[in-house]
Structures are given as C-alpha cells and as structure tokens.
Length: 236
Ligand SMILES: [Zn+2]
Image (cartoon, rainbow, N blue to C red; front, top):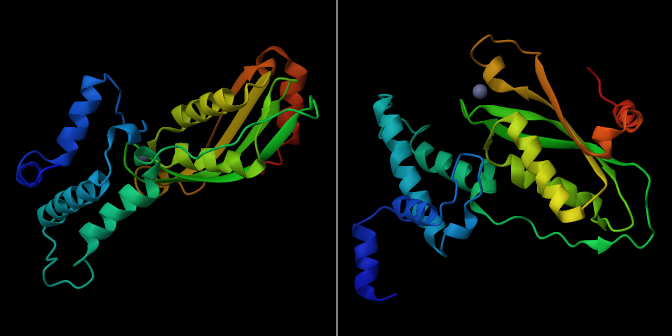
C-alpha cells in the first residue's frame, strides 16, 4: 500500500463501510450472528476498534454522561468497543477454530454425549447476556470423523460469540458439527438464561429457554432420542 493510499484510507471511507462493500459485492450475509472474518483484511480490526470506540463515545455523549470529568466512564467507550470486538462478539470477526478431524479408526458406533458445555452469548435484540449450557449427542458411523472433546467447546464458543438468537445459534452449531464430523445423527440441547428477561422486561429471574435440534437418526429413531434426553443430567 502506498503512502497516499494510506492517507486516503485514514481520512476517507470508514473501515466498516469498506468491509460492508466487500460483503455486498460477494453477496455475503452479514446479520449479527454471521461470521465476516474473511472480509476483514490484516490491520482492519484495529481500525474497526477505533471506529466503534468513537461511536460508543457518541452513545455516552447522547446519554448525557460527563465522560470528561467522570473517572469511572472516562475509558468506557474503548472498553466496551474492545469487549464487543475482541471478547464477547469475537465469533463474528475471527476465523473459526482449527479442528483436526481423525478417521473413526475404532469404528465407534455408540451414542456419544458431550456436555454440559457452558455457553456465553448475548441476544441480538438487546445485547444482554445469554448464559447457559449445551449438550451434544453424536451417533457416529464408520465414516464419521472424530474430533477431540475440547473441540466441541471451541466450536460452540465461536458460534456463541456473536449477538445470537438461541434457536438460530443451535442450528448454526449443528450445521458446523455436521460438516466437520459427518455423523449418522446429531442432537443438540441448549438451556440458557436470557438476561433481557431478568434485568429488564418481565424481570423474571428464573425463566430459562430450552431448545433442541435433532438430525439424522435422532429424527427417525424415537428410542435413540429418548435415550439421549434421558442421559442429559438436566436440573429443571
Ligand atoms: Zn433480548
């Protein structure tokens, strides 16, 4: 990149607009729970951080908070921007975890259950935390790839690290695990507390949302489905 181009970049188009244009040109969806890492060039995440910080400062200003004199909120704009881009919503901006798949050498064909895996997300309606657990049931066949137990947690973390809708999150996770492992059947149950229900709205502290996806043999075989659900040590 020449010096002139860098100057143009600095003074002209915001980096978010450039990224958005690439997404549009590729006809790639960029909803809140979509990953856009492949459209972000090296160094742009830093610029995005500056841009979100400035916009977040605008929100604080509009809320009439004296960030210039209030030492508590002095750096809040930057902290929130970092939290969004690098922590809680990093699953939008970074590439998926590398998962090594191994052939199923032992020819495992018994129901395998992984969980509970703690998941942390936020609802895309209010950006309030969604915290809960998931259980994954896998019915392998001899062609199924085997991945390490901790990898399921890494994949879940990547999918949940976006502003999510619980029903869509479990489908995204199921699609990803299906693609990586190609099992005969896949089942996922997610149980989570939605803080937008506890902190605001109906202020119900105890309500949890539970939902599930069933694929392949879990759809066809009611006994298998029952077995999976009975083995999940859920406390209602
Ligand atoms: Zn919400």
